[in-house]
Amino acid sequence: MFLALKEIKHEKLRYGLIIGMILLISYLVYFLSGLAFGLAQQNTQAIDSWQINSVVLNKDANVNLNQSMITTSEAKKLTVTNKEAYIGQAPVVVNATDRKKDSAQFIGLETNQFIAKDLVLTSGHTVKAANQVVADDQLKQDGYKLGDQVKLNSLKQKFEIVGFTHNAKMSVAPVVYGEMATWRTLKNLPTSFKAGALVSKTAKYTTDAAGLQTYTVAAFINKLPGYSAQNTTFTFMIVFLMLIALIVIAVFLYILTIQKVQNYAVLRAQGVPAKVLVRTTLSQALILVLSGLVLGALLTWITALAIPTAVPMSFNLPILAGVTVGIIITGLIGALIPVRVIANVDPMTVIGG
Amino acid sequence: MATIELSHINKSFGHGTSQIDVLKDINFSAQKGELSLVLGPSGSGKSTFLTIAGGIQSPTSGSVQVEDTELATLSAKQRDALRLDHIGFVLQAYSLIPYLTVAEQFQLVDRIKPTGNLSASELDTLLEQLGIADLVHKYPSELSGGQTQRVAIARALYANPDIVLADEPTAALDSDRVKVVGGLLHDLAKAQNKAIVVVTHDLRLRDFADHSYEIMDGQMHED
Image (cartoon, rainbow over all chains, first blue to last red; front, top):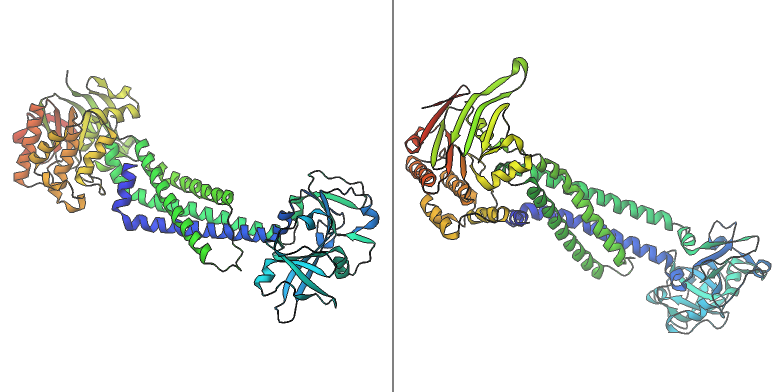
């Protein structure tokens, strides 16, 4: 550590550049992780808020809530307690006089079931009539107010916004909660259709209904349109950035080590064990990576404060910790390449003539 | 028993028709309290001799004993430990760590070998003797060639080794400094009972040596 710190202190520009590289890579990794998590959250916020563990869908719907329908005869075979609730999803365009159009996801609810009853509102009250809706706060940010009469798609009927709720997003769109009857209207369905799905807080909810199938909430979320592809894309970007970090750290440390071989050869000639020099290189790599990570995290934090709220950026401590540990490990793996050079330093190279 | 003894040392590089015999049946011994000088032109095998004596490389045949220990019986780690504890190397070039000040060069020795080094007052005396007491806060890049070499000598002596092996320690020094360094190495051998072996082509050091040897075409002769 003594040699590592002294060298960094003496070669400020050289090591500053390396720390700068690691800072930029870690900043990009943190930033992408924040975006990935933020987008993932906007896909699932509403579902997460329901705190459900299983979802019953029409087995032909390809685990897609929007495509799923449960008939009243199928519903009769379902056990519905206070831990279950029917939902129905329909994509809508919300529109009102003097307001901008907003694309949203309409979620039809039974007002006497837990989702409707447990809905946490930031203002207003819950849905009590068929012509009422509760909307995500994003609509409020877009200029909508309590009491606004809004149109959903091309329906002639108008709906009053009676409440706003926070963090209610699904498939990166704000959710508008209303009655199940409205869902049927939006879908142009007769009353013989009960809902799109039944969600349950029970982990192993089972049903005998022939046309229905129970899925875990994880499987359900994974099949949300675009969700899996989006997460895979971000994961690949983050993994590749980590690989780049590994290569950058390895290349820089390798070049630096090659430049120091003569010094190390002198120390080896004097009997300094190779493990002392290996420890110096590894501790130097650790100092560089940690410095870059701390500065990268700081820059990310400043960016997160300054970034517009429209950018779906969100941070999750376990993910950040995982990313941080990942970069530290890749940095240390990168440092192992020059370590091989050090282990084979030949003191003969400095005794000439 | 000699502090360092080389018996029937042969060292060859290459094989068959391309084989080069660098050292041929070398016999050499150095005692504590003596300064031994090994003279020879470039390419005569002086450095090979020094690295074999210091356990950095092994001879093709023959025996090397340091403080009654046969080096051939030691592992690489044990040879490292022997060099660290008993042998001080003064090298011709690249001898200082460029990002450490002169004072930190000695701190590095303390960190690697925490015991048995010179005391602070002994170091001060050594630095005064070498005329480098006022350079302790300077980096090697701020030193002249002669100053660098004197710091390298001080660093080797700071670890208080029983044996000092020096490779051209006066190569960059003017005649006055050669006298200082030669006198210091001689006095050190006498006063602190150390075995000092210097390989050099600098004939100016001859006046300070107890024994002078010459290596020529791989063979050693005592002058």
